Each structure stands twice: as structure tokens, then as C-alpha cells.
Image (cartoon, rainbow over all chains, first blue to last red):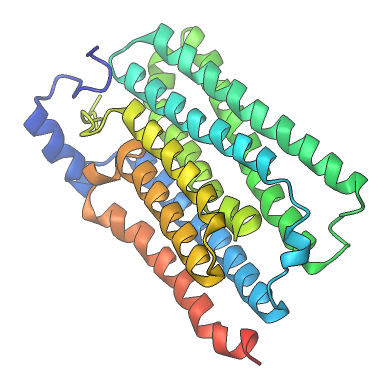
Length: 204
Length: 92
């Protein structure tokens, strides 16, 4: 196995494990990212809860749900889950000071994120073409709101990852190296949100 | 740089394979005859996928308890909010 993914830095495995579990020893920026993600849980949690309640109240929305394209959504799920793999690989590469590896995986993450958005845009265009707009019904209103908000998060993640990719290419490598983990946390969270949006909108 | 990246008990690639297998399982559950059981199982699979990402990709299992609490509180609140409103909104 390569050094990637192993305990890194000057600390031994035991020291690193102890330090990692000590809240006071956590970098403020990292705690800030976790706080931000916690607030995002309420945003998406509230939206999903409202959707579930409205759907039960409306009797299921099965007719509306039959018009969403599950195959496209499966493809996009594969793309997003794979991007989670590439971003954690970028983090692992950054930890061993592997600039080339970090940049390669960051670029792959950006490209996969762009693929997700392009496929989503194609999906939207097909749905609008068939007359399903946010004004069509409450289901479609929820659909566009939830996937649109998620897509916005993907776009922000792409910009962050692209920024780090560029920063890592120049003099800012050491600054970028520290931030890869934080960008990764955000990206994984976006993936987790999709993991629940996918069954909510396409399967259930 | 203090590292929080621990050697994963499962390799990242193995976790990805599990996520793909669970995606397939979730889609296959559409064939379950009982609608209610199918939905419950689909969300159970989604929860397992989310836990895999949180534990292995976000390295949550190496984080302090405070981080767990930070995430758990809004999750519990969001679920509780939905459950509390359920009788009033859904079954009116």
C-alpha cells in the first residue's frame, strides 16, 4: 500500500489518534466547517421533512414521481459517489505532501462535479420540455427547490476545489494542503445530502 | 501539520465498492411488493450509505465526541420536527 491513507506527519499513530479525538486540539477552521455543516443539516433536514409531510398529506404523489428519470439519477449518483472517493484520495495525497497526486484528484473531483451539473441540467431541460416546471405542482416545486439547492452546493464545491487545485499548483501549496481536508468535508456532506435526495425523489 | 487522517479500516476503494453495491440494492428494492416495506428498506440502505461516507470518508470515527454532538443535534431536531408535525399535517 502506498503512504497515502496512512497516519502522517511527525506524530506517531498513537499521538495522532489522541490528538484527533481531542476537541481542544482541533484547528478552529475545521471546527468551523463542522459547525457550518451542522447548520446545513437543518436547512436540508427541514426541507426534506416538509417534503415528506406534504407528500403524505397529498397521498403519495406517485403519478408525479413517475415522470422523473431514475436512470439519469442513478448515473448522477455514481458520479457523485465517485467524486467523494477522489476528494478523499486528494486529502490523503495532501497529507503525505504529494502535490501532484493532490492536484490530480482535485481535478478529477472538479470534472466529476461538472459532469453531475451537466447531467442535471440535461435532466431539467427534458423535464421542462415535457411541461414539468416548478409551477406545475407542489411535487415539482419541491423537486426543483431541493435539487436546485443541492446543485448550488455542488457548484460552490466545484469552485472551492478548483480554487484549491489552482492554489496547489503555485506558491500556495502549503496553504492549499491544509484546506483540502475542509473542502473534502464539505464535498462529502453534499454527497450525503444526495444520498437521501435520490431515494426521496426518485425511488420512494 | 496535525493529521487526522487515519489508515481506514476499509480501504477507500472498498468503501466505494460498498456504496455502489448499496446503490444497486436500493434500486433493486423497488421490486419489493409491499410499498411501505420497500420505502423503509430503501431509506435503511440510504442511511447505511450515509454512515459509510461519514465514518470512512469524513473520518468521523476519529473525531472528538463534540463533533458527533454538533452533527447529531440538528439531525435529531430535523427528524423530531417532522415526527411532531406528522399527526397535524399528514393525517388531518
